[in-house]
Length: 346
Image (cartoon, rainbow, N blue to C red; front, side, top):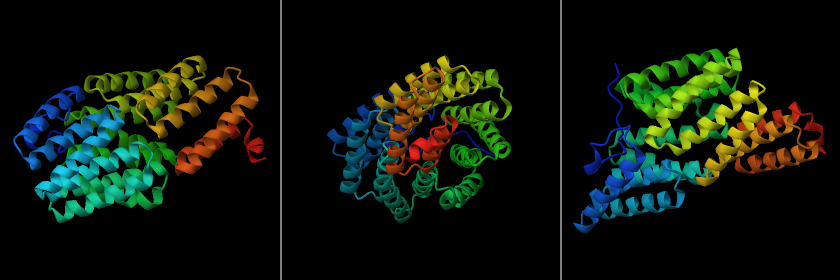
């Protein structure tokens, strides 16, 4: 039903790159091909190669380089009059904006990308841009607003037999079920995503699915060791592809699993590692979640109560301002867990 996963963001002279190519390799070849296209005066090819460069920088956590690269790709596409390439560049920029926590900008750029994709007759970039809008809303906690869009995109991806996008949609829907308490449904969806990703040789999608399965095994079943084994397997895939962001979220999840098991000193160490990784790539959502886990671990290890209260109150304010509803609710639960909710209200 599903073919081998492919990476439609690797375009022009880079179509031979695999979805599992290491980001270091993508960046090296993409930069070389981009320079060749620029020297030979081929803006359309420069736009396509520049897209891969932008995405490699973004996934490596190099925010400034990614920002410059997607904008250069857009300018080259505009010079070439290539509407679809303009859409792809805007998709990359919108995805970067979401990663940086700039949600209004992400909505604007991804919306424009979807419009240009439709105008340019590129169904794939239109689908990726709509998926980006859906993911932005999901990350912000607006499940009612984007749940239907996730389902629509899942149906489209299944119909086209597009493994990578099917895996993405399954994982997004699974995460919403997990966050609203339907753990059995979430597990089944993560499991299907893992199976499809493995058959399609989609290492990135497989790593995210394993992370989701580990989370539920820990929460629902208390199976710490199996959860840690799955996270170790996912980590190997992340390292093989230089997936900095996915690796940081893997480490944060390992902290969650260890915290739930009462292994608070180990959890603290993992949260500290994840926090450093998120800060290195300017990923505010991940940073906030790692800070939350670290604050809870430190509280369990005897940190002064007033320091914990101050840390959680600051986090709550940060997340309130950024519009991350689900993460904000997680801080509220932590305040209740430590009997700090009444103090926070004063």
